[in-house]
Length: 82
Ligand SMILES: [Zn+2]
Ligand SMILES: [Zn+2]
Image 1 (cartoon, rainbow, N blue to C red):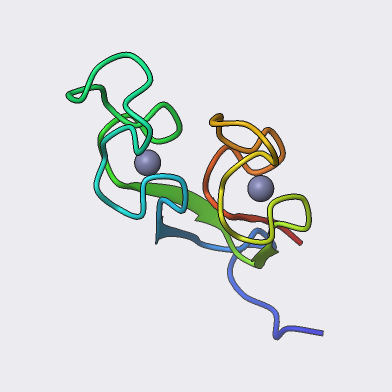
Image 2: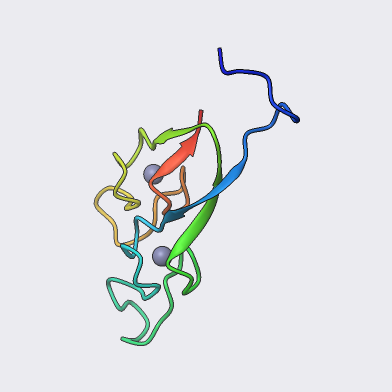
């Protein structure tokens, strides 16, 4: 068990967006080459709350299997809350 902290909620940390690999652009250019990443919306990163783990659905790629869409489980982050 983790040590008790001020709040029982984990802190929020930035992780690199797995879907666009941090570029902030749509890696598949579905709409246009200038499209923002549909998962993170051009930030290239996403906020997740600790503790988190690699998304079991996409294996951390942020990509939904056999599609060019972001993973619905982790929303393209590649990680999900524990
Ligand atoms: Zn992204
Ligand atoms: Zn996922």
